[in-house]
Length: 315
Image 1 (cartoon, one colour):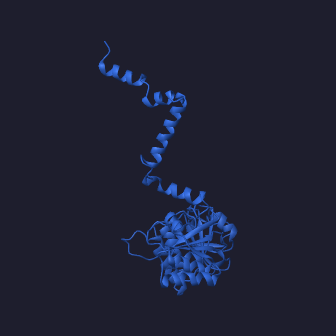
Image 2 (cartoon, one colour; image 1 turned 30 degrees about the vertical axis):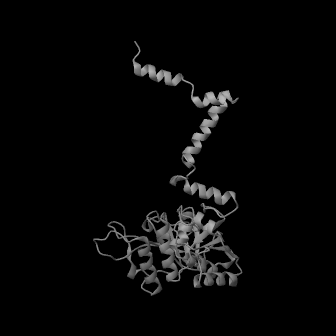
Image 3 (cartoon, helix red, strand yellow; image 1 turned 120 degrees about the horizontal axis):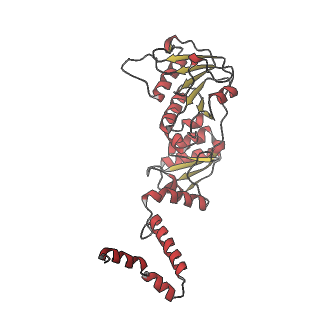
């Protein structure tokens, strides 16, 4: 005797769905009806039961809307364009890179002296501006962003005669933005990203740098060898915590010849092993004197300390 539970399951499996019967009666083949049902299910999974966009799909929808209709879309690594959110970022872009700015988009709710300052800066730089609430809603991450600047993300070339900051394997956009602010504060305008997946034109980096990115030259290199081949005959000073068995010089005692490359990051080859970037003329390991209870400094803090010492002749 077949159990009632098994019999009920078999009956449900062999029963013809009501919607299939209706579509067949209306002249729609059963296979076509099944395809329509599958399409409806896919739509429900994407948009919800009543067409409401699910939270996990909002970014994809905004990307598709911006790209398909000719408007600005979210930046992707390697894009030839980018954008920066915020009034200060827009002003800094117009000040330092007016030739790279395509347009300035404003929120219609922005008025008064803030609007006048942005429109005047755009007109002086010869850059068009317009009100575009839709683009701001699609691209901004915070509702208080009232301005957006569209710009060309062209690669930079470092000045071979100037000092460089080299960041190895940096992954956090906030850390990179803080380092760029510190570099500009001490007038060091050349930064190399080595072995990093960060895009120097990422909107996250532009926002974290508070516009300092526009006043700097930031170039990316696949590895230390690529950097050494592009900039040979340079002194490379590797900065890290003092550790037993690794000879290093304290920052106040390091006499760095110029131009110098100030390297920060765990992936940089140890200078004591002789594994310098190709073409490097010299290399040394330098540590920042600190309390023994502290293991290491934050990247931006370490860069700021070293740049301060370099600018004031303390190393």
